[in-house]
Length: 516
Image (cartoon, rainbow, N blue to C red):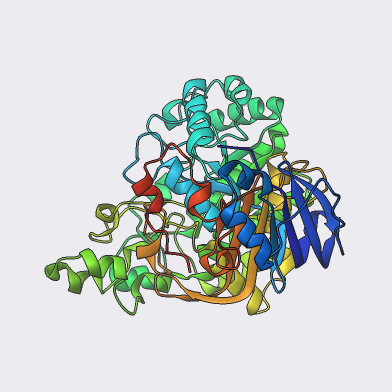
């Protein structure tokens, strides 16, 4: 992380939920030296861990003390009454776009958006320019993240050189450099022989192949799900078979090689059933699903009630009528499917067929999306809306809160073999913590996104459930303005205090009041 120095933090009176430990109780959690020190119904503070309470005399002392004295006295108590405290969210699948596509996103902007979304660890995909297919590019991402990142960044290496699907990468070299898996995400590995070789190597290295399942011969030229909506619009659709045929192939290869395969962004009922059957046969397969595939259907691409504020603000008048007929922000690969698919995906979460929820955060520029549907880029900017979107499933009774937390914490940590240090509130583990209000209502406004990518189909939606604070290695990486106001004027814990010092101050202040 950018800076592992932290000050003692007592999170008091919240509902502590840690599915990995089977923990669900109201209590306190104490953080010091970047680690979880105590956890329980009532934390007892030792004399070496004083805290600043909110009595007036203490605040006055803080205001009048010298800078050196102030630093020595900094301690914080966070009253989490009515809030949920859980392990920091882990995103197995995102696109930070750097190097090469900094107009879409940077490691700094992407990880700051991740912190706002409650994510303390993100796994970044390899479809950058140059792609992450050698040690130098992996080292670049890790170095950049250590200097400018707000959260932990774990790189995923390419399966094939240049992501061309022809020749496998030096996978052992990438493993030594610190990748947590291998993927050509954005494109499939069409050659069965190349994929077999990749699985052989990944099996020897003990790392998963993260599989973008798409038969390009079936999906070529497709814009959206193949169904009544695509027929109505006169657009070429992407059939469910394009995904399912590749899932089937790679499950067979996983059985043949003994490799661990992780199926990315599952979107169809057929894929869920194939994965279920593979698990019953003992094949080492895990799977993820995105928030948008759990909550939006193919109709969304033509049911936008209005232009998003982002589009309305920037579109020329001549474009307005065309833009209002469909929403390019709902164009994603794999495409949004049907209500029946969503039902099966939710069932897959509940019965363990699908272990993780991942954002597939894919930020784009205005030019990428503010165009005809056929020309628009695939992808949704997902960090800042993921949790609010998913809490809708909880409030509707489709999944439990504990299940949701498990799919964002303990389960993804197991998939990448980091469950001893991530996705847990175990005493002694790094203090990566997410605090949220399950009932706080808020409205999505893409103009206030910290991510450079404002391409979201959720613009204007009202969600119930909001991340209030994110703690990374014991440091508050994000705090909601409403919660932050409770601690002023205690220094060094506002949103701006935790920003990387080497970023320009005007950029750091940008969006300061955007998350109330």
